[in-house]
Image 1 (tube, rainbow, N blue to C red):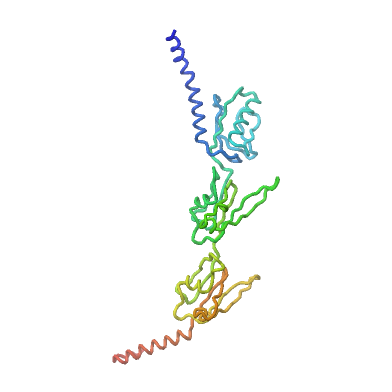
Image 2 (tube, rainbow, N blue to C red; image 1 turned 90 degrees about the vertical axis):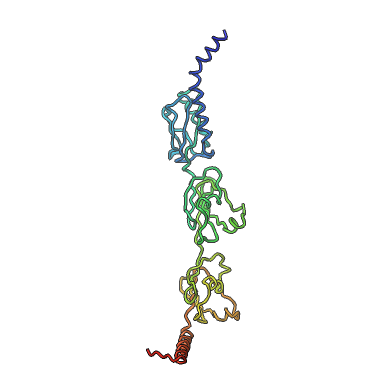
Length: 315
């Protein structure tokens, strides 16, 4: 009796094993599933229907927000649903059209393509990626390998905000200091896809003329940009800098203005420092009179030294 029972079990194993293997494969597919998020157009999903290989396949959510399985007359709505909700929708469709009596369906998200986040501007590596799982503003900047040295003081986050049945484009300004230096969690927004993150370049002030390192210098704090600070950034004045410098600035109408600056008095602390604005040009001219005088003195000194040593060379 016992031997007959064992033989019956052994004989049933070839029948049971394939079914167990198929269930195991469906469970494994679920383990590799991406984080559950609402599906959207162009997302790629894998549909597994137990014991129905003709229905098991990978499908992309079409432009109308549905997926289309063979044997089904119509599509199954997918956009806006979680994977588990889509499973229920496929089950109901298979039952309603009497294709399967009690189908077992597993939906696996293979790729998200409906949740792009773009990071551009003054970052080391502009990038577009999909918002899979939890993504924050800092995560997005990390994917772009951080800010460059030319980055300004603000980060612009453009997103769609729903107002009733309509969508409105909103631009939020995030302070770089609050986000990075102060680590303020209030400005480290959660991103859900569809956001554009732009890091504008800092404004610049140009210094030209008699300085050791002329160039364009980024302005991090407009209230702290002055003539003395820009001279320091350009590594100081050359020996023959003029007493009077000039600021070239455009007014609201776009006309160019020339503003004189008492440079020598500022350096001697006899006159207050002058605040500069973004896009200003600070020009420090050459003191030609002083340069000519110093050149003449240098030549006379050389001439005297040559005469005293008994050497005189005529040119």
